[in-house]
Length: 585
Ligand SMILES: Nc1ncnc2c1ncn2[C@@H]1O[C@H](COP(=O)(O)OP(=O)(O)OP(=O)(O)O)[C@@H](O)[C@H]1O
Image (tube, rainbow, N blue to C red; front, side):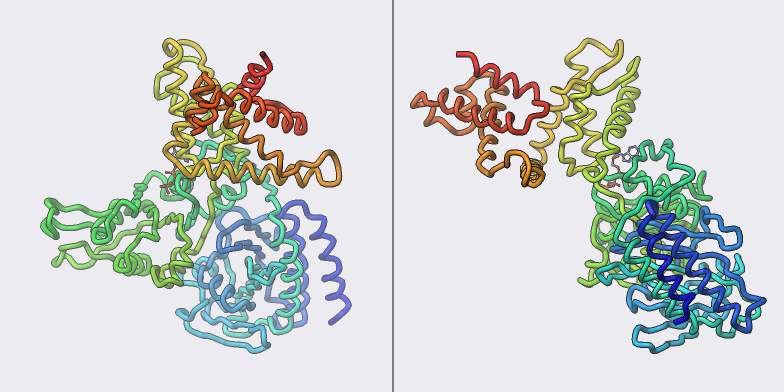
């Protein structure tokens, strides 16, 4: 190892340590790699002919894109928009074999630098790991004749992404660029970077912060990086796989991608496979002719044909039957399909860009034999994950305001609509298993309750806390697991607080959780407006019978006071009212 290589390793570390943005960390490792490759090329027969075009860092842990950043070598500028190598097959090869690969783009050959030092050369365009025709064409279009790809390893050893270096050297087509001389050093640089980059989800510094629009009205810090990624992915024709829980907004995000693609203005067709029985999936996708099956009273072109020239969003793709998976794979590979019952016309073609959504773990479905592996790799080109609402609480107040104003406009309301601060606090502290869809329902319900309590839609509308509380209560009736989730969250908060106090102020012992009984009793007294009813509601008739319930309530509420004294902070006004009422003789 030469001194300059040592220096490169040593000088990279402090740059990575001090990086506060992903861009900075990625720039540091790319610059070190550029220098390494340039020095190697300078000592080779291609010295005067080869030039580096660009380098890109792809961070995709657990198989979904988290960050993407690239530098255009000649200008030193950040790569904008669509200029990224996004070959699903290269990624799947790297992930599986955990080794670097060098690609001769024109000759369609792929050299793998196996971890045991062996080297495998594969020559056909169809060979596993080789980028598909469209990706190769794109690379050649920007004069990239050779690409070297290095795995990005996380500290635990998992491969959490890759770094790609594109070189242009027309004179070397069919010849070996000197990757043999530098691939080890590049792998070490990537490993050093991986230890920092993959372990920390550094934010992306964007010159142009993600701005909300009609199709994505709220973009907070927690989704800004996702929107940034989608800005690069949306304009391409590759498939985007959007994973995320039900109701988180996958369909809307798919629509946003369509609106930010060249296909904007063309049809956007959405098919939710959850609602389509397996035996009708082929028909819904590819259409049918009249009489193709019982009930087919007239021709139906199918979702693929309706999406022609535009975009087709297939939600809940994991629900696709194996038969329909085969049909979809064929459509993706050849853009060809057959309509049900159309024996005469033969094959049809449609140019539709595919976007796919799921809440399931598709890899697990592949392992279980429920999802075709070849189809998985075809749709897993640009995977992104939409977080559940509970993990993007920074956005929640803006979503709630947006949904409230949307409802207000639908109702032709005058003036403005807003939540009072206490109502908003309640929304932020709720668990949201149903995500944005649930929030929308709650907002609509609270709006209706508020309207019912005041006359007409005249002036500004301020939604009060009690209406939100009632709306949430209705909702938790419909969602029995919500209480368990809330209890669990409360337990976690309790433990967090106990930890925070460790070694410092008064401890928070387990016994204080008894205060919860007092709070439940207090809430029941407040809700029923009567102690006897509250005790009956909570199954404590025995205490009532013995007329012991007043004393019990006093004792339970004293525990509540104890914990409030210890914790301090703001106390819910309703709880205060119960406590104050009990002070009176
Ligand atoms: N960008 C958005 N603009 C406006 N409303 C949104 C947006 N995203 C989500 N919502 C609200 O959340 C609801 C659920 O969104 P969406 O249907 O996109 O979720 P999803 O993740 O596709 O859910 P599922 O998988 O259950 O179909 C919408 O009906 C809407 O009320």
